[in-house]
Image (cartoon, rainbow, N blue to C red; front, top):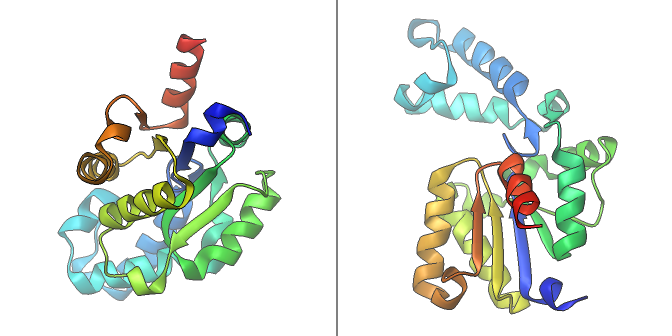
Length: 198
């Protein structure tokens, strides 16, 4: 491991960053609407405004391990994740998909040619009621402690997740936040930055 690899850890989100989950979510929405015809919604934007029961049924369907096969890789996902792994070595796929999807996702990753040595972190059942923003920040904090990392690369399409990681770093690891953390909203943004700095 070189000095950059020794000091750096990288986290890459799954849904919307490595894989497109639109088909899985569309099916979950269609099936949930059948259960709740009087409160049916048209798109994912309306999900936040729906009842708790509607959301619970939707997410149970959306996170059914059998539906993981509906996801498709984002165009540059496999090669970019490979680049990140070879550049920084300690790399995790950090997804809030529940642990019940772990085996199905591992098979999906292998089927689509993703490196087997990039670790997959799914949200444990014991954390199901922890907000995703907090859980992801806690995972980054835990990996900083475990590895002694001095630099963090965080790629996530939800700005709230990046904000929470930044807040955690400000409180627990201010030296890492100050010039030693990079946040990207997509793999393309990460690649653009690497290309510009080369």
